[in-house]
Image (cartoon, rainbow, N blue to C red):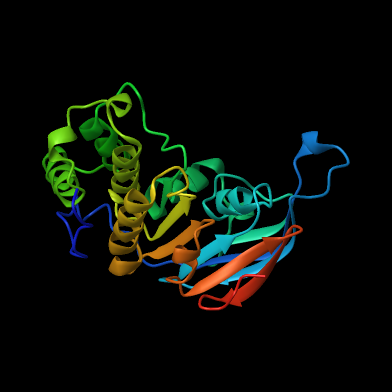
Length: 252
């Protein structure tokens, strides 16, 4: 892969079912404490955060500061111990498990640091999963996967299994899987943390092209100062609290 793809719209899946409308995210007086932690201080405390639709937000902080916990709350993977998370103005506490699963499936794409690809499925099959879960028709899903493979320069890898790919290739597959169903929000947890610098830059450009570049809300946790300088906003977690700083300024 010599360069990141251009920011163009790749083949769309079944338009009747997919392409989520823009949504905002909000955290109101959110705290998070894990029951097994005993007397350990809460991971997050009194978090208030507004993320408008289309925002490009980077979250930074030391390891163990709560970045992943915050992303899991924003991605509706966890519920807070206190306070509430709002997706499109609706509290996740008011949603049933079925409704929460629908939000995760339809509105949110998640890129994990560990890739989280299904090891028994090929690259092509991994990309098909979110499309099938969202009810895309077979022909439309096949067209979408072909376009995603081409956009990420992975056409010659479609029959490979994850263990046969390099770290950078696995991360490209993970990103394409996350945006396959055209979610409104793309969340990435340390997406370049385990990659060499040239590969990390390609992954970043891929995320920006298919995330913020296509109007999606893009939220990333990172240690990379290069990423911090490209975002609209940078938020630092310190002692379980959030501090907002400018993207161009120094992070305390």
